[in-house]
Length: 83
Image 1: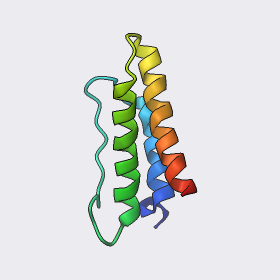
Image 2: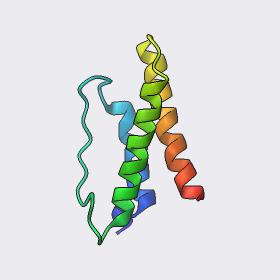
Image 3: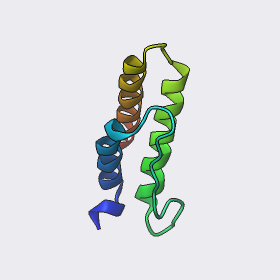
Image 4: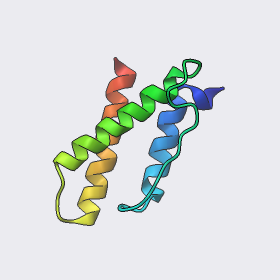
């Protein structure tokens, strides 16, 4: 059940981010908030924290914003994996 562990969900997030539309894209997660799969909740929470950080650093260029968004999410997930 790798897909329900933190690393599996984090890998999914990072794989799907480039495929999302910048405005209006959605990722849907099953088992968020479940006591049986805390890795899902933790990875999604880290992703949200990364999105919030990217929003604080928003630039006018769509390409720069997408790169910044992906970097912020990746950094939040990496930090959580190391801690």
